[in-house]
Length: 384
Figure 1 (cartoon, rainbow, N blue to C red):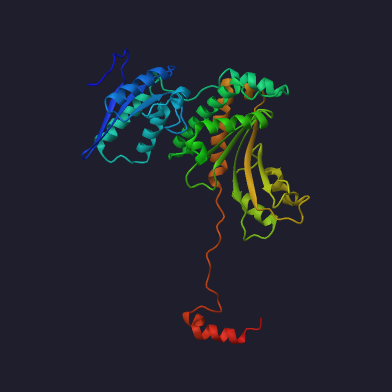
Figure 2 (figure 1 turned 90 degrees about the horizontal axis):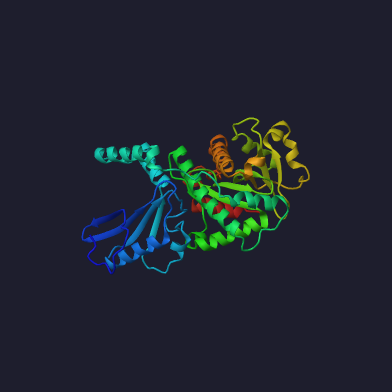
């Protein structure tokens, strides 16, 4: 298979992909792991060398480990390698989700390809395939929670914090795939360009957020929704907040009118922990109230803000998990329950306010009314 090989290697890639388009050819080595088996950085480096010697463009890895983007490899040593051969990574759950979306959205026209894709879907979903989502936080999760609960300070170079942030990245990617399958369209994590291009900087910034605010955060982008979904896991409060921020309608002049516009979009009644945070202009602090309280007495929205008009809202579901928050598996299962619950019951029903289209004035309905002669006549009659 490989004509150029500087030395004998004890392991071999699981596959080779060759894509030909006209006279051009693109090749990739493929390495896969299933179950609890994880990717080995040294093995991948050997495959990089093999690829370079044989004119192969890249290495693709697939495992139960998750990556936010294909270039943000879950193995740190692979990311830091100086090799010029790129390594791209997808999780098995990403492969499963892609197959599910292609089939459910009827995007495969060729019947033979559709049959093969469905067989792949059946195989990957069988328990013997060893494919699984992100199931539990690492043991360091409990240690970090104990430190925060006792009022301790997370050290700047805390290895526990780094392991927890890495695990959080795995979970948020899995969460986006879960939502993708639920809504039958691709849901992605919303990252700044800086964080997309520099995963190390992303990790550094999120470690700082964890140290200073005791929070883990992510933003999920669901196509055609009013706003991205903002998810926060708060270690100090032991709760998960899931919400969306939308602009208030500018054609409504009072806070109550703007708030009523929002309340009409929230179809659920008496959902425990569902809040609206009102955003005020200038340096005025936000205020928040339970949706159930606002339905009973909307006037409370103006308390202490009589002279102001809100310019936006953050609608969010806050779930206190108590002791379950600190538990490796229960934290994940609760998070994966709360996020779809908020989106399905609240987020999917929210709409963006749009300024109304300009209308033709009743006193000037025709082209003749805005002709040069008509404008000249208006100018003559103008009184300032």
